[in-house]
Length: 319
Ligand SMILES: NC(=O)c1ccc[n+]([C@@H]2O[C@H](COP(=O)([O-])OP(=O)(O)OC[C@H]3O[C@@H](n4cnc5c(N)ncnc54)[C@H](OP(=O)(O)O)[C@@H]3O)[C@@H](O)[C@H]2O)c1
Image (tube, rainbow, N blue to C red; front, side, top):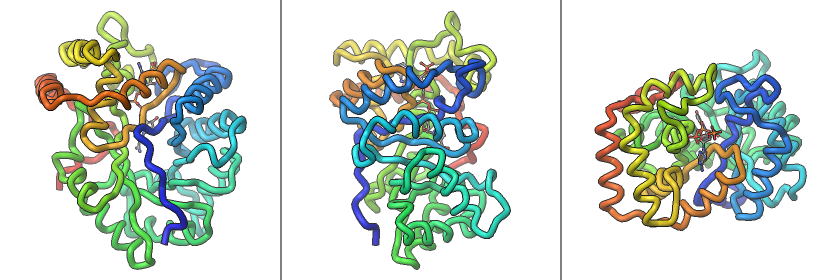
């Protein structure tokens, strides 16, 4: 019953880091991002054909959506797709907290529809999923997906939407060389079988797999990602060195290979881009076809790193 087909790109663009407060330089990522910086990122993305932007109300508690909306004003609405989320933990107390949160997102972004609207996590699948039906019927939301859901939660959401003639049209879970729980829990196979696009988030583990950060060059001090990853950077060195070395064969860099790995696994990576040159990396990643030997070698080194990068907001996927 969806009005048009969701256009699935090779790579989508993530804007969680855009929610950081640029003035103080602190926050989840510790990034200093001005609107001018982000306009340059968006210009590069537009010029190279990457046009699906992922955000959420809770990224910087509205700041990511606001900045994204301002930056995208320079383009026609039909030139890009917007993906944002309902986060159950931030729901208000009105009659329809999902519709209310959507309205606030539309206002902040400055648009009258969202291409892909997500339930951010499975806090209460039976309670929140039905709210999506009215939003789909209103046309303010074109397509819906679920994020951080395990297989049985995805199936329940699909059943609820199915009873109204809709379906789960996309899945968005943490999936990287270091965190393959959705693969091990059968979610990737399910998506392939049901032809549901799987969006992989944190493919670069918030920069820890980019090769830029190391025990000598730690993630930004005082940021949440520094707390999560700095302690494991020594164990990641062999893997990031191999990403760089495989990259040399393809005229690419370490993060491009990590992204190409996620593409090779049949997923659509959502990469958190904060600089124009990151978009150049996405162009390279989209053109790399990794060999099965490359993939096996990377997965073996990732397993050997022996780290667990599950986010504090995530539950185990295995049922
Ligand atoms: N649904 C959910 O629960 C959920 C959870 C997490 C994320 N997400 C979505 O997924 C997106 C991606 O995740 P993420 O942003 O947390 O992490 P990520 O994509 O794994 O990493 C992003 C960081 O990697 C670095 N980076 C990106 N491209 C690079 C390149 N080509 N070369 C070198 N470094 C590069 C940047 O760090 P520097 O800025 O330090 O250079 C950037 O901040 C988010 O933005 C969000 O849209 C969704």
